[in-house]
Length: 297
Image: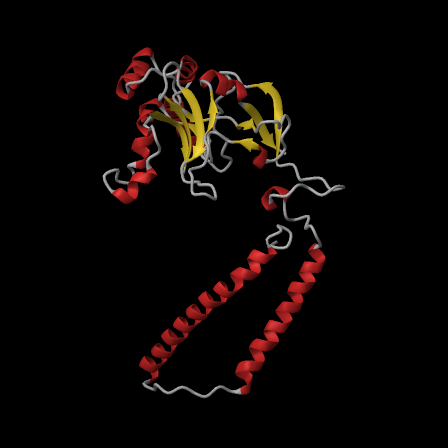
């Protein structure tokens, strides 16, 4: 895998550190076993090394090395089991990349934005009925009063199209949605699209909408100097729509007019130590128009 990814040099440079860590680990385990043996048997002596203590490890090492070379020869270069999008390299001429996803031609609409729960074949009829009732209550659309309370709590007016989605269903699981990267009209791999609703694949319910600032305070203290850098600029005027770990889709109210939509991983930094760039859409309507349905290839 190191060879196919073009990182063989990094692999060899990492080996000394790996051996050092394993040497420490094995030494600690040996001393623990030595101590337990002394406690149980009452004998603290150690037997001298015998010839077999060296022969067996060397023999096993030789066999596994030959197996490793054999596997490497079978895999060839590049390995067909090592996807090009993981290695970060283009697919060589004459080879085709494995398709992971397939974009669907139908546009995303208010009616197709959300998805119904998957059927559970192992559930009994009673369990299925209970789940259906719970899901129905969870996904009931919001009233005008609900929207007003949510906006009053946030101190922000939500985009009309987002309000229309909440009136249809109060957040929850959405359909398989992605946004192709620029200049990628028909992407077939996950690395060529943005998954704005993250690994949870859901929209935050209106009553759970929070500022980016609030989500960071879950693990960082703004009054502590070492935690201050965890808070993005303008975080108090950013409303989280979806979040998976620190991959965040949010509304940005830091400029006049309608809020723009941003997407980024707040835990990711570039090689210079700068926070990862944010992908922006002019407003929620522009963001919604960029969404595409996808299915597994």
